[in-house]
Image (cartoon, rainbow, N blue to C red; front, side, top):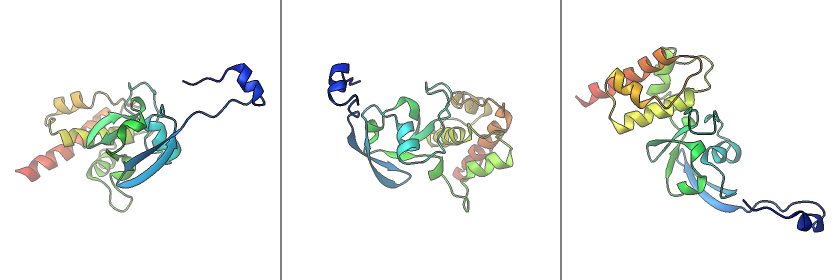
Length: 178
């Protein structure tokens, strides 16, 4: 972190210099965004504060709750633990990129159908994590789904609905393959 000494701050009229920024080009939900951000800006903060996509939530800010889960090149990551500059030339998908009000993503519809949320704060991260799980193709049973979704916490305890919603979509995809 760059700090300005109190002597130089005083010489500049008592105002510290702004932090250094750089240009970062991100592809988010299929759209190009050019941002002027500090190099230590997390992907989560870039999404929320610079691109104004507020569906991705800031929960613990330590990678422990999963509320900030997004997809990068189809793989789920905790966006609070990843710097935005690391994701130039990557395809970033947030909850806003998975469906629309007119055309819900199958996971979004399943979450509604199975009452898989209460307060809704964790829901975007849960859905993005579930999509990553589907992309990975490794979870087929309830136990596998529980294991692979264990990094996403729900303080309201809607786990039964979340499991049922994800299982429905997993089973649907398996039927389509067969």
